[in-house]
Image (cartoon, rainbow, N blue to C red):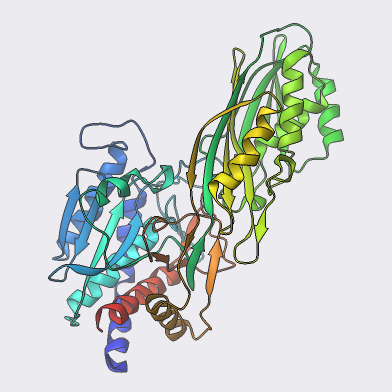
Length: 467
């Protein structure tokens, strides 16, 4: 490909910015987080409707699409069996709280487009769609085929991809725009653990009636609440002052009971230090209130295992690290207590030098020693692709060609859509150091980046598929 072809391609993509904004705005309007399954909609009707709309847009461009029973969809404009697969997802995490506008109505301000899914992963999916449209409209010849795979369950275990790959084999090369530039070639392993215990109910004295915190396992919980009895509002206020936490607490009285709310800051589970954990903060407050009986002992045990502000699992004994991928992260993301039943969930990201068994062999005994039973631990081993592979080097070259900056491989704590695909890497769509409020309120993407991503992906398709 000569420079004139690239300049023509990039110039044409510039003209598509308005259409890209419209398409992204339409996709954002679907609240496509996992909901109750329905016929033809395994993850809920809004998710299926979002997938249908995205495929309809691609069909309107003259591309060929296929819907895999509401689990996933594919888009292609080339003939033959594709060698390059690009995996993006249309599902999102729930909106949470703290938005300055409707999360499902796209808003443009200061050169950014705001809405749930703007950066994770609807915006990047739109950039891929329009990169393919540009290549098709300009009739730029490709020797190898490309296929876009649109999934619908990335945020809740990627059952969509397990279903899809039960029907189709992976392409020779795969990347996902569900990470960072330049290229992510190392992804930490992941453990999603659960623990519980039964506590004798005793509502006399200073006691906890119920506790609810966190909704999804792969995000720092921004809101937690509990109901206590036998404790005065004055005592709670003094404990809050003594706690010195950077999480905000609110109290409301209802007869003999007081509801306490903890308001933290959400963040992705792979970067828990970026958030403020409302669950562990509220546990710390309850521990300071010295609850009576067995519930008081269990609150104390949880505070010893998961102290507020600690994100490396040190108190559980799993603070492992390596040079390639950094330190382990451990997040208590969900905790519920009611009618004597306490249940919690952890999200753990382990370095590439360790296995799931290495971690569980320490994690489980540590919790069991405190009286908690552990079960339902889902483990995913780390993912590694050599940085000197031809495919990785091609993508790094594209990054350098578009940005003029040195392209180097990076390691992350989050699992991307290619974690289970041999040789798969993440290529975009965020640049290192950006804060687009992914999984948080006011999630956004720069309009200039929406276009830049389309150029990056179009050139990547060319470089991989023209040879």
